[in-house]
Length: 103
Image 1 (cartoon, rainbow, N blue to C red):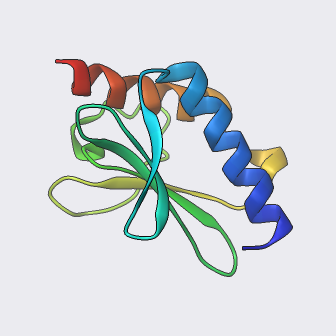
Image 2 (image 1 turned 180 degrees about the vertical axis):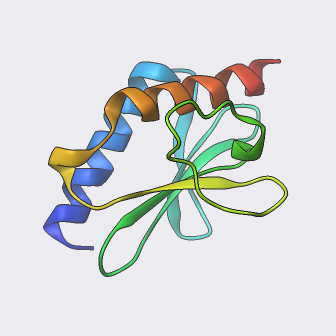
Image 3 (image 1 turned 90 degrees about the horizontal axis):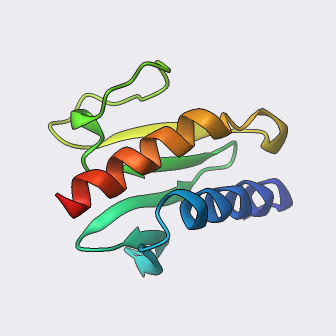
């Protein structure tokens, strides 16, 4: 991972601690992930960005219009620059993942 990826990952970690404090960081399929009852979110990286994928993101309300993906369950957000991270939107998605996990 690049330095930019490291900065993005640290922002995701901060947001997860703030909005889903019950979720423990773990490694799933070789990538950082957060798990409570089940995996809430997982991060993967490419040359140009990090992808934050939500296991049940297809069930989320998305007033921010940032979730991508067409599968049955998972939705993701691509993160490219730390100064452009949509913190409020990600916090909302993380809370939805945590609320779903508790239900």
